[in-house]
Amino acid sequence: MQIIRDDEYAAVVYCPDTKCVQVRWNNGEGPGQREVFDQILQLIQERPTFTYIADIREQGVVSDVSRGWMETELLPVAIMSGLKKVAVVVEEEIFKQFFRQPAHPPLTQSPQYLEFRYMYSLEEAQTWATEVYNYYDGRVSHVA
Image (cartoon, rainbow, N blue to C red; front, side):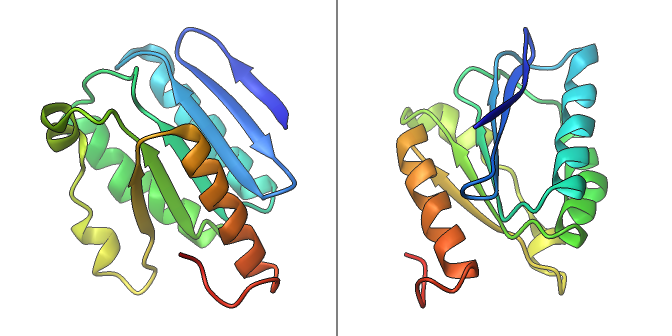
C-alpha cells in the first residue's frame, strides 16, 4: 500500500497489488473535500485502477450539490480513465444507510456503467477488490 494522503479530511492509499484506491473519509464537507476528490481522480488517471473503496462511516453529511458534482463530473472521468467498480463502506445502522445511499441514474443508464456495492466493513471491501482484480487480470471467470 502506498499512502497518498492522511489528514483531517481523508486518508487515501493506493494498492498496486489490486489496482485499488482506498479512501477513509474523516469528516463531511469542507474546503479540503474537493481537493481530496481531485487527488483521487488524478490517482485514477495516472495509475491503473479497477476499484475505488470509500469508507464513509465517519464522513458525515454530504450536500446534494457536492453529490451531484461527483456524479456528473468526477465519476464519468474516472470511468473513462478505467475505473470499473466502487465499494462504499457504510455503518449497519439502517437510518444512516438510507440517507447515505446516493441515486446513480446518470451512471447506471449510461453506456459507461459503474457498479456500486455497499458493504459493512473495510475488510469485506478489500476482499472484494482482490476478487475484482483477479477477474480483470484473468485469474478467475467471475466476481461474486
